Length: 387
Image (cartoon, helix red, strand yellow):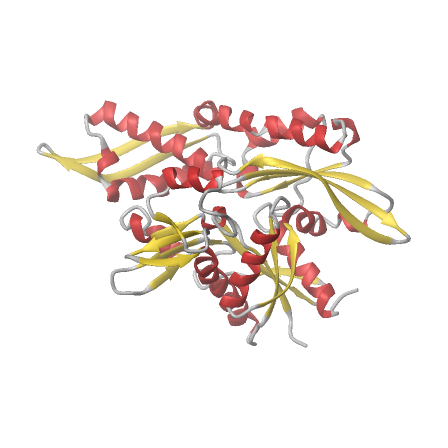
């Protein structure tokens, strides 16, 4: 039988992996990137853009660019998360006849699984281009707190994309598999701290050894559906645009093209500051007034970025306390801490997590890819490639 791919269908970014021999391989997409933005855009010409190309025109085509649709999948229109989302996204969220939250694009309503399916199609094609064979089966991951209707809607998205979803597995469980925690002897309790692009999740999992078989149980899960790397970007965007206004007297919030460039530059600067102590945001010809063109040039230190986002990192600690309390565990009873999500690369995040648990988190697996790798490992077990 064919290979079963593993897909991490994320709120902000998605990732696909497959087992080659006994090694998991994260597959680069057509643009050469190992993760794909979970963004779908519908252009005036009736074309559907997915991934980086959709993200690039998000600010200039806001009403027809759908991102973070994972917050809507399998949810009712009345759901608190949906109502909060409506206030925050530029595209239109509507109530379907059956009461579900759908999106409306140019007067045409689409169910959340239809939009997610576009992302899954790209992940499927990414795998097929690499493997040189048709792929029809996948393991897809979901947050541990997803209910039956959210899990079913994710399966529906797979089916629309032409994938038979062999299994839906929890993201923290997938991350633990990627770290090989199921290979350590005896029982263990693991905290999975997942700070992604759009959401923050903390899960406390117990891995029990039952007659040589490993059983995963999610003891508790908590988090914040509206806390993620994009909020870190926003803090930086606000700071940079304020600096530019002080400097030039021009407010660029009303200029979508300038804001798109600023958004991209802010994300890039944030990433650079995880490995360097300072960087420069340099955007020539960002805008112009009667006196001529204006350039945005701002020196940025890691300390400055940290002061802008410290409160966001602090916000992730309250759910940690609740999750531990719900799991009936103290920090000293946690055997391993796993970091998942690109934003956990930020030194400040790692420092706060270390201070909270009193021990260093593991970082030997790429945080962007751990969930997809775990899904691929599970896929290989299901297809009989590994035991």
